[in-house]
Structure formats: C-alpha cells, structure tokens
Image (cartoon, rainbow over all chains, first blue to last red; front, side, top):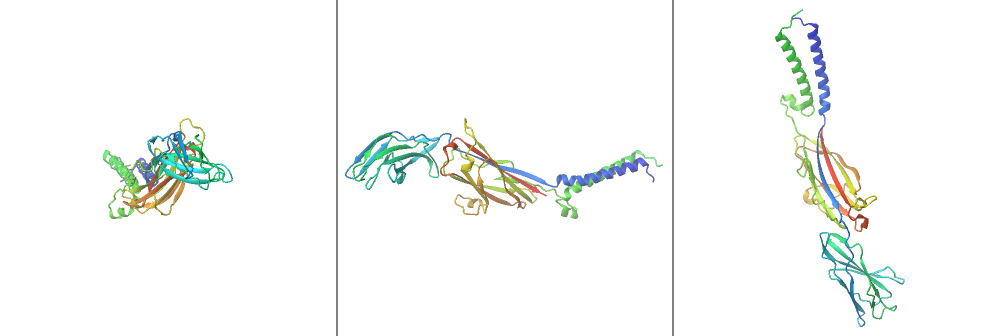
Length: 164
Length: 192
C-alpha cells in the first residue's frame, strides 16, 4: 500500500504535535497547588477611659497618723468592658525622695487610707480606673491625682489638699 | 499513487487523534502516578489543604479582639490537614496590615505593641498561653509580609497544629487608641 506525500506530511505533523504536547503538558501540571488562609483582626478601644470621678473628701486622724480619701466612683463600664478596680499609687512629690513610690494598691472601693507614720515629705495619691478582665485591662488615660501633704518631720497629722 | 478512500482518510485521522490524546494524557499523569502506570491502573489523585477544616478562609475567633487590652494575651491553634490523596509540602506566609483610628495621621503604632510567637504544637490541647514549647517564629504585628516556613511535608491525611499567641505590650502608648491590625496566614500546599 502506498501513501501520498500529503498523507505522510499529515502523519508527520501529527507526530510532531503529539511530541510537543507530551513535553509541554507535564510542565503545566507539574505542581498541583492548594491554598487556604486563616485571618484575625486585633483592635484596641476606640478611646481611653476618662479620668476617674472628682475628689470628694479627705479626713485625717492625728492620733493614728492616718487619713481617708474618697472620690466619685468611676463609670461601671467602658467600651463594653466592665469596671475592674482602681490602681492606687502613693508617691513622694517633693524632697530627696521625690518620685519614689511609697505604696501601690488595687481595690474596687473609691477610697484610699494612707498611713503616714515615718513619712518625710509631701506625697501624692495617684488613682487610675481600670476596665476589662484580670488579663485584659485598660486604664484610664488621665489618672486623678490627689495632693496629700504631711509635715516635714513626718510625725504630725497629715494635711489633705482637696484638689485634683 | 494509492487513492485515499473515505474510510482510509477516517482511519488515518483517527490514528492521529488517538496518538495525540494518548501521548498528552499519559504524560500529564506520569509525574504522580508512575508506579500505577506499570500495573495498568491509573488513578487521579487530589491535593487539598485545609485550615481548621476550611479549604478557603477561616477566621480565628480567639485571636480576634475588639478591645485588646494592655498586657493581654490570646492563643489559638490552627490545624492544617492534608485532606487530599497526594502528599504535599506547604508554605506559610504571614501578612499584617495596620490601620489608623479615624482622623489619625502618621504611622500606626499598634503593630509595634503586639508581639506574636508561633510554633508547631503536638496537639491543640498543648496550644496554650502557658506553653513553654520552643517558639519557632517570633515578631510583631507590623505591616508587612513574613514567611514562617517553607516545604513542610504533610502526607495524605496527615495534619499538624500551628499554635499562635499574641501579646499586647504592658504599657502601650496612648497613640494606639482606636488602631487595629488585620493579619492573614496563607497556607499554600504543593504536590510535585
């Protein structure tokens, strides 16, 4: 049986095309890929809690060298977070120990009871309201400061300065 | 010269088509089922990588916070499962994008103040905030892209647990208020 030149050319062309495809196809499918993703977004409150309420009272007791400060309660919630408590810092505000922390405390009640025996200078009560949970807290942006003055020898009754 | 009848032309054309299809089809399967070819049975495999059961995008609820607080920590596992029938290797790319609060200008600082650590945990139950496992990848949620790992092998049906923990700085600056950061972990599996 004899084939015409056209048939031979057609068969040869087919073989070439098949060869090309057989080499090209594997490289096109060589790497099968799959992809998936996991996402998260972390945001902070849209604003910081405001400073706590106004200073209310300050009483002193000479015999015990004690004082009692109270302030208006902070709002119950902030940005959906519950009130957690107050962070109270008692700090020297003058003299050689200026800036030294005397005592820190946390409580939910809106008061502080500093005892001044042995105090040697003027101090300040710095109160910050905290919201959130024990492991996720936000403190008020502007803490409230209460001046608290004692005599220079540290033995006299404290003098409260009812100002913020 | 031999005259081509209609049947001869059809036979030649059919031969060419069969040759082309056969050549191309066999070659494309040969890469990942060459042993099966010897037995005469060719089975197409599949590649499918899932994260926490999703083959598309899954949200990490525990790591997502609306009012992230100072010093707070979130930890969450991501289970990567090779749900296909072919073995694969995968690459993890971590990308974060920070956003300013409305009306803010300048560069965001939220990313600087949230650190992350990530590691391969032995199981989801060991992916905890107190885990002391060696942390393979560490950094902060600054805007940018980081590759956490390349070429991690997963056999067909196998899985492993990526554990991620984020921690907000104990005393972040007030400039952080109102800012947020979105992060995406993209897992790309390859069979080759």
